[in-house]
Length: 150
Image (cartoon, rainbow, N blue to C red; front, side, top):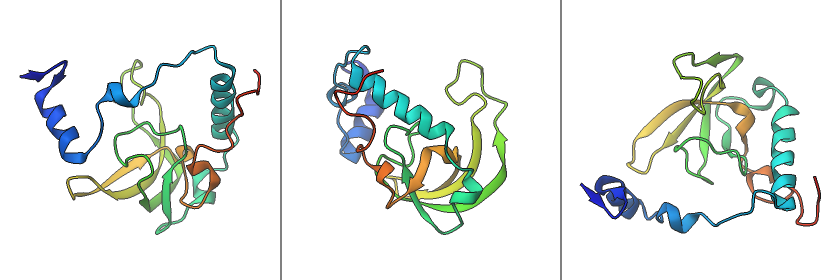
């Protein structure tokens, strides 16, 4: 059963959570745009130069996704999560296929978060994608300017 081009249940979930349709959230962008290139470069360098998670996080600290680094449905963008455990040696999920975006992702931070259904959920996340709630990288500022090139 579908509603337009999406499954009926997905539409109901969006309606219950107050989220917009995916087409409403996405704006058309030019991949060759210099600002997009600069932002992408800044995000990649941020991940490469990040200190190890076990040095940055401790249990009971509050974290959020870094701007532009969200790759999982939970927690939502801007939603806070609680660090439950930090591993010095990252877990690697070898059950994923090479075509998956989660293939060989180093999972080193266990976070706890309430989902929109009111269920407390724990999940392993790549700590390079997280920052403290008060960190400037939690917002879109500081990742390139429109005039910045290559």
